[in-house]
Length: 250
Ligand SMILES: NC(=O)c1ccc[n+]([C@@H]2O[C@H](COP(=O)([O-])OP(=O)(O)OC[C@H]3O[C@@H](n4cnc5c(N)ncnc54)[C@H](OP(=O)(O)O)[C@@H]3O)[C@@H](O)[C@H]2O)c1
Image (cartoon, rainbow, N blue to C red; front, top):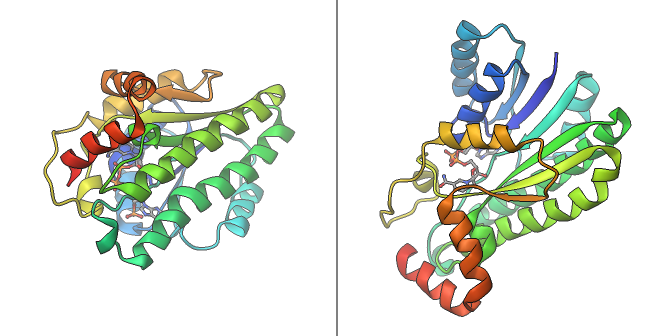
């Protein structure tokens, strides 16, 4: 049975991705910090689908090199890695807590990079694999008042695009999905003070990611607003776009 590893599975988009991959017959290895939420999700999915589900409560801001090796030594049939876990800090840099900032870099950049590298080696040996890295419309431009989050997603999209070029000769593909706003508790966790427009339903986004997971492209923009922003980022200056975004996010 094909297996899929999903990080940040307990809530939001990760929860919807878990449901989608379960419905498509994948056995799941689900990772995030909150054990209760992972157990509830597992129980819910097992009522509907005859698949194997393992939950691994783990904080990905901790060590990830041995952690990835342990996963890869414990399972023999992993086809898909989804690096979905991510966090934001939505405020002026003057008010960022450096401890939170370190966590953001460790989660959005370090953990995603190490998992991608270790799984890439494993997929190369297998002769097949998909690395799906969840990125954002924010990867396309600077974002005042959400600066480090947008910069971290620029890293995710750039890194993923590059490794896709390196890996495709081995039938291993890495795709960064640049996503629009999604209706999850992301803003709450990012302590965003301003109220923004409601985002897309996470189940709709999970369906789109699943549908495009066999694409050979390194970056895929999901949704009209993301495609439009991609276009605008090629027309207007960084300074103009950053000012527009900043005025909305302040
Ligand atoms: N929401 C949006 O508008 C939006 C738009 C574009 C892209 N994205 C991206 O989509 C992805 C999912 O975001 P979301 O909206 O679903 O956010 P969310 O509701 O805040 O969910 C984040 C998930 O990551 C897990 N997580 C957080 N810190 C972790 C850590 N240190 N170690 C392991 N797991 C951790 C959380 O579970 P625990 O608390 O149990 O650890 C949760 O399952 C992120 O990469 C985000 O950047 C979101």
